[in-house]
Length: 480
Image 1 (tube, one colour):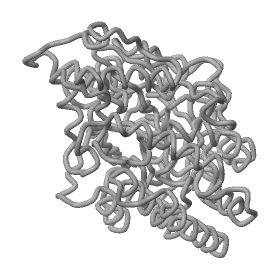
Image 2: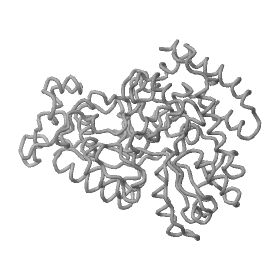
Image 3: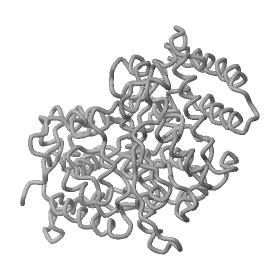
Image 4: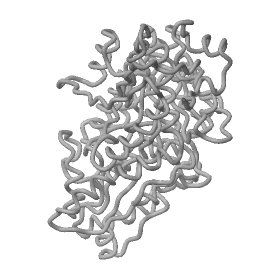
């Protein structure tokens, strides 16, 4: 029987593997590669097939789903005794993270749990409900020739948690981007901008012509969609210092220490410049955009009423599908977040941002109940998917996200979404580290929305938010 390609056997001695995985001497199917005895052999028990349940989300749908089935069959052919089942998750109408927590506690969820922005992850870590990827990331990927450490394959490192470890990992990414209506741009004599002032000039011209310049994602003051593109160009140096130069979002404790030392504040010039620039952008959004509710911006762009759409690259697949039946079809293009010059902020890097963060369909946590042979095989499957040719086949059929694995070609029709050369790391993430904790993040969104509605002045915003940030820093440092 041909040896199974098993990640741990490829790089660790038997003793090292047992230590890393915590597998007992009786559970060595992966390491020893023992064949499964046929049922016909008298007196020899049949080894039970180990089934790995994973929700592959949109990669299991449509033509991408057919590719996924073939990849699963390919992996299973060299892993006797193991089976992968796509297990779509029904969140039963409740918050996905609350649902996940129930599964972790009950130990009855999938063997890989989808983890898009896991705001409860710290709680789960303290309760011992999740595994960490760090030991596995140091191992070579046996499916990639010459690879010395799996972590070397990733475009963007996954976020560190408060203990400095990696609790969730993504093989694909999302990128913030502008889509634009080529016909409207040509009709009104505007070009895709490369500098922020050029974008504002184009938006002003479109607005004067009676066209909605900007249809933003969710049509409300959502932190990550409009504050962060400015903040990552203006607060880049500050946040790099917080993170000790590591290209990973600074830990809450690191941000809190800067607040305590007076190096970072809501009232700091970098924060204020970011707020001013992001707030100015919103005057080009459609009337009533700050009221919340459903995302009407997509329909405004699809119908040809809005000239641009600021959103994530996942919308590429939606446009491909929906434009086919749209009443007024048009050709669209895309352009990256324009560069902010120093004339707008002294702290501006004057470099493009990567605008890429870990969010996609192949974004997973490993539950603590996933152990032994099943855990080893689960990691092996992820390494198999990390082979550029493998992941490329899957993503090309989905055409909605960009790869988080190096050397994977961008999906068809998404060539413009490449990370630009000499771009800076996306340090500032308002969903978490910028405001330290969930409570201050929510206050940021709520109060900024009040600023946009004219219900709060910037002075009132500063007076409200600075004490909240200081209290969050105090609590974080006390807890750690």
